Amino acid sequence: MKRLLILAALAFPCIANAWDGYDSDAGADVEIEQGNLVREGQTIEFYDYSSGEYRSADVESIDRYGGSVEVEVYDHDSGEYRTFEMEDD
Image (tube, rainbow, N blue to C red):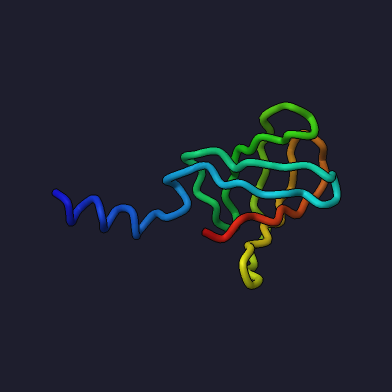
């Protein structure tokens, strides 16, 4: 059973916990909610601290830079592309 849990955690690393980040254009923190599969082409739900509400977005691209991950999304609610700088744990 323990091996199965370890294999599941390795196979789905972005699903386990909420993921904290920052949208520098909006000047606000964002949090990609637990349970989202953050992959190109997927729709995710995130909490936008600048608006104080949950939003949905399509993941357009993911790039890793040093100690952070840049996630570009298309925000369904605002109709705009946004770039999140996410913590790379």
